[in-house]
Amino acid sequence: MRFRFAIGVMGALLLSTTHLVAADLTATEVPVPADVEERGIWAAVAYSAVDGIHGFFWGADKRQEATDLAMKHCENDGGKNCEVVEVFRNHRHWDDDDNTGFPYKHCGALAVAKEKKLTTVWGASSAVTRDEAEDAATRICEAGGATCKIREWVCT
Image 1 (cartoon, rainbow, N blue to C red):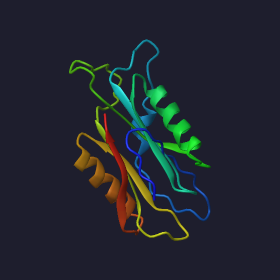
Image 2 (cartoon, one colour):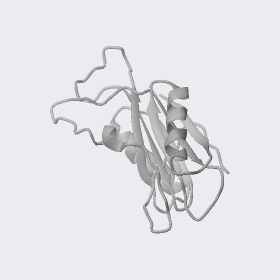
Image 3 (cartoon, rainbow, N blue to C red):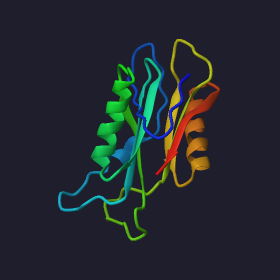
Image 4 (cartoon, rainbow, N blue to C red):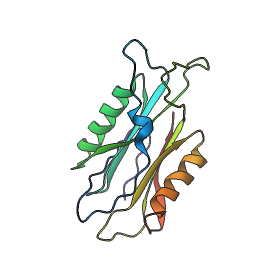
């Protein structure tokens, strides 16, 4: 198992032989009004469930930059079916509210099943603290019936 600190990416592909448990991605789908500049320090997680490649990117000025770089790192590490599974951000300044509705979660985590089976079970989540992000990712993963462990975490 490979661990990386700081830069990485994660995503997942639903296959008939792959069971996938993922975080609710509605936060990543919040549309950005054309006349609003998104504020904060952005991070993204990508994961490829078919081969277990993951990675994170943090420190981006824009949401799109974080997701693009997360995908790039996942693919560069050999991920065959990388998908962005979590996007989060931190305040650069405490008056960063840009009124986009995208929350400030600060930390993200990826949990994967400890046992390798025919199916890949995983979970990704973001939260205000590292512990909350890790707990949520583990709960999501273990809802798939596996015993899971944190593969990676990052806080912006």
